[in-house]
Length: 444
Image (cartoon, rainbow, N blue to C red; front, top):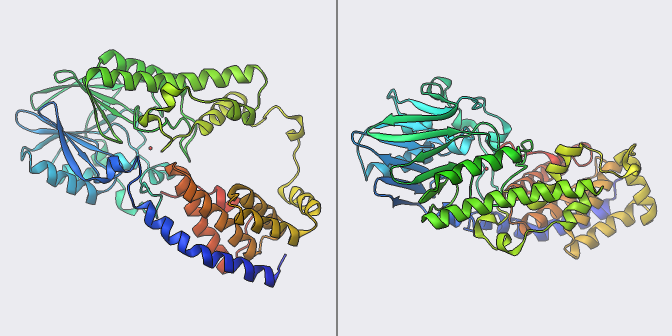
């Protein structure tokens, strides 16, 4: 399908939205309700000798000052950001680093190891099952909050550094610099995490077992996380009854009552989503019906730390359904589906042809019905993979979706796809329908 006039019209629409694109990219760098927790550069002090660096990167980094040295927990996403955080820590204490503890090996927590340990023989403690091979997930976790361009070249952690300390399994005590720290590797969200319990001061460093967002039960582009194991881990953390809860993403929670309430609500939210989804499956509900029917009660939905910045309720429900039932959604119509191209041809025929289908896509875009516009663009690309007009239409639709969403992974995926679609339209690339929008960004 090649319609010069339609291509010109689409390019005109695209031109009008270039300003929107620039505005969106700029907006991605401005603090949102979530970003303010990590965009404001600061070091805060809790429990006398515990200091938390915020705003230097997507994650936080903590320093515990001991008698003759300091212990660092997590290393941010790059050596550049970790070096700046260490400089701030050095203004507080010039004692040598005696140990580095990694709560897990996502890149936003481990990319700056070199800046923390330098050329010293500093032991790096991590979970025994930690994955030391960089993955697309690591890259995704390094993406800026605004979903900007992603780079992974500067954060490859040398294996010798990563393996120079203890490999933690179960519950182990670490005695260093006059400090007694408990490192706990329980069943968790991705079987690679541990949390740190500093009992003497009542400080719990949660890693990504708890962070200020709706839990990412399915974290794009990873596999589904084990919800039952996550719940068990939160139960174990509740037994510690912390007075301070230091999350790896967001400001620490201060106070025993507040910390316990936050952990309890987080656990109960995950448990509720799991139980309600399983109950719906037992009633033969498919994933779409489950998503439409499940809502969080007000006491959970109103909590700032359960807003959908990283995880989404819809994604959680679909992930649990797929984990329990696989690909089949219970509708026999979908048992032997037709190809995307065949479906697209039927839709085009119903619309009165591809030109009418394209016009409907432009109308949906004008009406800010961006999901429908993107879907119609997918049909057009299926019918003519070389159509630059259809790719511009889809890019415009995804740009609108990126502006609407508050969920960081979704925004990153949308913007990544917009860039790909624009490039493909310019080069006249011929790819299969839907591929750009489904490509995970090579970038908690």
